[in-house]
Structures are given as structure tokens and as C-alpha cells.
Image 1 (spheres, rainbow, N blue to C red):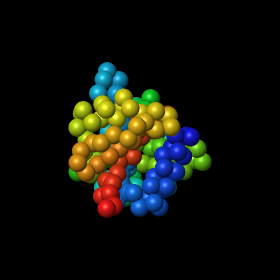
Image 2 (cartoon, one colour):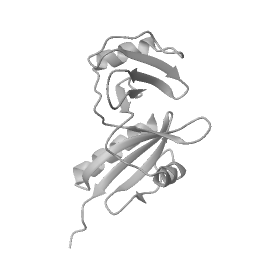
Image 3 (cartoon, rainbow, N blue to C red):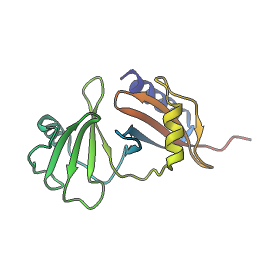
Length: 166
């Protein structure tokens, strides 16, 4: 959780200094058997904290019984990589990953979001990740990123730097 606090402190510092014109966060999890699952900080499926806490408490390895939510019935499945909420009736963003910080605050990661990464970029970010943050990587002409090792995967801060002053 120290990594999460360090990431949040970095983002707040960068945001207050005006370096971040646009920013987003991702969580990359290595999958059993290889490959990555990429979770997005923002997405279209929004559940209330009460709904997420209830589903988190009911999670079972085979999946909980369906629970009514604002987005229709949902099930919670406990996995090695965290609790996953499955939303059967939504058209996109059908899964949320439940994360809690050291203080117990909830964070939900979305299966779908607006931050595209190539397999090569994801691999570079995973390989560069360190507990206190790896080196800054240039993803493309408009985005830079820094990756951090956390208990549930590789957290990635992505930002669009402002042009250099002349």
C-alpha cells in the first residue's frame, strides 16, 4: 500500500505543478498461464460504494448468488488476483475489480475504459515497474507513463505532458 500512496502523492504533485494536462491510471495483472489483464481507473459501469461493499462481502470462489444492483444483477467472484464483480446485463464494461487501500477505502477498476495500450507497451510497463515507481516511459507522441509494483498488480500512471516552455 506504500506504493499506492507514493503513486497518489506523485499524481497530486504533478497535477498541482501543472505537468499533467491529462492523466489516467491503469492496473495490469499478469494472468495465470501468461498474458495480461488490463483494468481501467474509469469506465462506464458505476456501482455505489454500498453495492460494491455488499458484493465484496458476499464473494465466493465459484461466484456469489446474483445480487440486485443499479446495473442489474451482479455476482462477486473471489480470485487469487482479487474480487471480481460480474455484471451480466450491461453491454460493455462487464467486470469490476475491487481494490481497497490501507485505510479500507474502495477503488473499483473497470474491465473497459478509454486508455488503449498495445501488448508491447503493457510488457514494457510491467518490466519497468518498481515498488517506488519505475522510470518514466514514453508510450507515444502524446503519452508518458510510470509503473509501480503493488500487491494486486502493476499500477500505471499515464499522463500527457504539457509542451516545454520557450
